[in-house]
Length: 250
Image 1 (cartoon, rainbow, N blue to C red):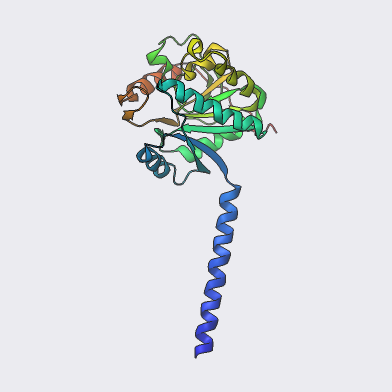
Image 2: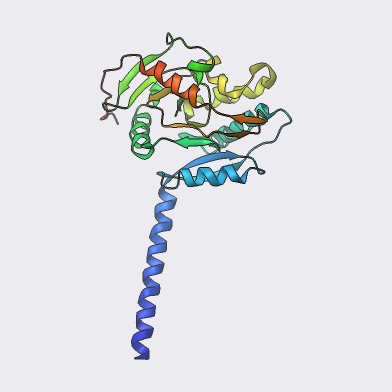
């Protein structure tokens, strides 16, 4: 009897080891997203970890760079991750800020968008999951250009950018993006920099990521950009986009 119990325990132990090994292998094979998070805001990191719990990537925390001027520290954090991507010879890097909030259908939508981006690297420099530009900066749709539609609901456009809460940066843009550091005061907030240097910015409709209503350490106040995202989404969506994307390009 004792031998049978021992045998069962050994078998169970082997099953647990095999399961954990496969789980670790799966996790290590998943792509990575870097989340910029201040050391004094573990609450935000906890929230984003819960929000992206089932996402098709693992999350790695990046300790945000502190500066007396909040937007400068934020920009330097983005630059540090871009430099990491360049030094590591990454083909692209996915970066999020810790107030990022995914859409309801995020996993399916992001998988389709990322597949197109990875297969059409010559057509973009940066993809952004949502923008507030067309409410806060300029409500005109003149600079919006349709690219193609991935399905009846998901459409890609060339747009302007405001907000770097969720973005996918192509290696083609690393050097240009890093030039922001050359004169931080003159160049201003980093989330306007891609517009200034005419990067090829791709957005998708509907937006796949917005921002949580929360206290901002940059503005030292509570921020709510829901209306700005909604209005920008409407402006971009108003541009006709009926050309189907070529999903067979290697």
